[in-house]
Amino acid sequence: MVEDLLRVLTPKVLGTLVRRHGDFARCEDAVQEALITAAGTWARDGVPEHPRGWLTTVAARRYVDLVRADSARERRELADFDQSRRDAEPADTEPARDDLLELLFLCCHPALTAPSQMALTLRAVGGLTTPEIAAAFLVPEKTMGQRISRAKSRLRDAGARFELPRDLGPRLEVVLHVLYLVFNEGYSASAGSALHRVDLTGQALRLTRDLHRRLPDSGETTGLLALMLLTEARGPARTGPDGVLVPLAEQDRSRWDSAAIAEATGLLTHSLATLPIGPYQVQAAIAALHDEAASVDTTDWPQILALYDLLDRLAPNPVAALNRAVAVGVVHGPRAGLAAVDDLRSGVLADNHRLLAVQAHLLEQAGDHASAAARFQEAARLAGSLPEQRFLLSRAARLS
Image 1 (cartoon, one colour):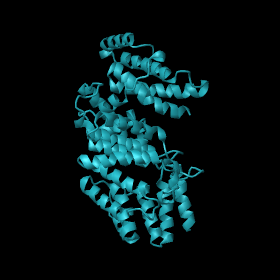
Image 2 (tube, rainbow, N blue to C red):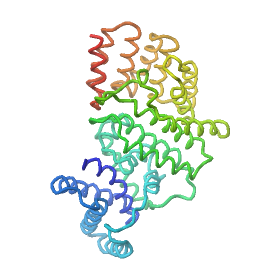
Image 3 (tube, rainbow, N blue to C red):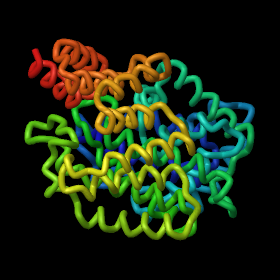
């Protein structure tokens, strides 16, 4: 409970501090230390009446400590802090203000490389831990930690400002990519006991809606919003009573959120008819074909495969290629799907549990149950999420 609350509050408190002081790196360090204090104090004494104000106050005090520790800048930054403190209302009574969109664009500052922009945003706005971000990028944890540290230093050196740029367009591609990564981490958590983290999917959806309101003529913003809605709509049927993953083919489709599907379909239809097409719109079109089918047997798999081929031309990536292999297996048979998976085994997905799970599924479809069971077991060993581990082990046990 405390951990979930802190995860929700972290980006808001960080946004408040960066808005007041502008020093992202030091504010981020202060918030991280305040989180450690809160985790211990709240677990012992209970959650305070105004947890956001409590956390903001502690983080602000820690910020002062950090400023004082830097003797070369002490006088100027303390003066800035004293002025901002006079300007600000007391933390416990300060009206709630949403700074997340400004924080998102700050993290996507052009002084940073695209991978650093994404990593920093996942940390600051998504509230993901360094191991979770490393898993999302398919890189070692140490590499990701160094990337985040360098990104914070570059923001400081560049004098990045906490404000929305007048022209959102130049940073939009990275911002959308980051929002999609945050959503995906929430929809299929890379670690932990829960498969679905609604705090992350909800945050990504809210920020994408905000962007769509500001940029209604952006086809990719519309496409991403539709894609998120279509994916999140399946959430209620995605786990069983015991929390174990239920695959798409076995889900009770009457539990899908029909209102979200209708909203997304309307957005997508308008977008495809009036705006230039891009990767998010194509992915949303694939999701729509799944969501509109009454069953897995009536799904238009040839059209889905054609859309994956189009996606591969527009924006090739290994995860989409793995999903395409599933469609190849349905349309052209499991052996053809396995050949498509083999093409991916030497890339970044080489040791990824999802590649092994797809391979196991196709081996099962091909009738090679012994090999399928072995692959499911290996995939379970590599999966970080407990619900996924239990699902994969149950599949292996069924075939053994």
